[in-house]
Image 1: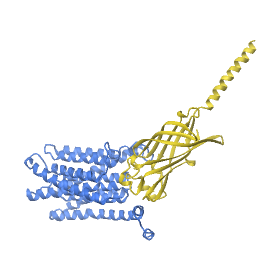
Image 2 (image 1 turned 90 degrees about the vertical axis):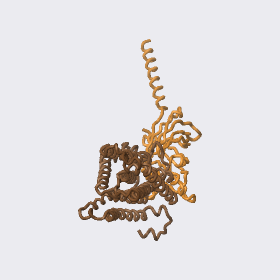
Image 3 (image 1 turned 120 degrees about the vertical axis):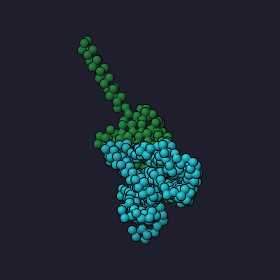
Image 4 (image 1 turned 45 degrees about the vertical axis):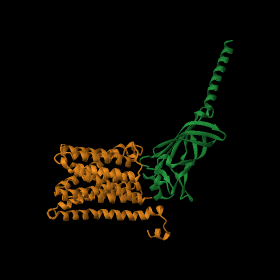
Length: 194
Length: 314
């Protein structure tokens, strides 16, 4: 009888351990923004006849994905304004000055999510977008979320595109004329699991 | 792009407001000549010109201030006007007025840098020690230039020192604008117009109505130096103004001290003023010419349509 009882207790203990381990496999995964395989780019109208393209080369961020309860997922991104790159050094210097981004006063552009909702093919993320000292709530549609494990490291990626008006973020209206007010922001981000 | 019509309107408004204010305050203050110095009239007149000029310039100043130009135009310059107006009351001793001036000089760099990468530690190129050094050196430079120009003004008792400042401010404004910071350069225009208009009106009223050779330029110099330093400081640390250009423009008015050399100071006052203005104008002219050349090389292709042949020239 004691032998049967001890076997029963051992089985019960193993089951508890197994259940606990299984539960942690589905907990939230934290990912760091992979700068090498991601990009934040933008384009704006020039004289309403062409597009000027640019990108930011120094971006960091992280996101936490909770597959069981997506509303608990979080996304955050920080862009260094100084890293603006439009393939023209004189224009980049001009953009960093106070008439435009004012990089020394407002060194970063930030996004922090406040709510996440799963949608078909991705997530709808609402959050605070801060640029040039002004914060506005925006909604991003992140498409993707497919995972890939390579060399034992899990990676996941999202894409999104959004439109912002510079006038909503305190940019000087006099500096908006030749370059359009609205800018299209394209973010392709790949995260590496921590 | 610079809007020349708005610039012209701002200059005219600043000059007109200063002229009217100077005349009104000058005549209103005459019964109180025992208790007031001419500096009070000059400070208030320049202040009126600045308000009118910046109103028309549509710089979209914000309160609370969010950037360095906001802090210069809504905090530093009004404080300078207030200090010089206070110094215009004879009951305020000169040493107290200078304490207020030096306090403003000490605080101004930190105020202008507030919230920027230079003080928040957001940039690893600017650790705490570097920020402190920048603050101390800049404050010392401002205090030094202000004191030396004030001393020159008192010793020479002429309008030369006060007239050198608008020239330096004009050179600074043009250089800042050509380095790509248009609003920063434009902010110099009402300051130049207000100071020049006030100085000329008060000089004319003093010499022709009062028949007096007395000249009190402390107020014009105080507000001018604060404005000049502020614009150059912002152009250097928030724009693309070089350190060399900043220092040349800021220190050039000190060439007015040549007018105190033994052989020169005994000449006719008008001759001394002309020599001072010419000497100060030389380095300012060189800076503006070099800035224009750099502008043509770097910025003009972005702002204007230029043929490939014109760009290849450089």
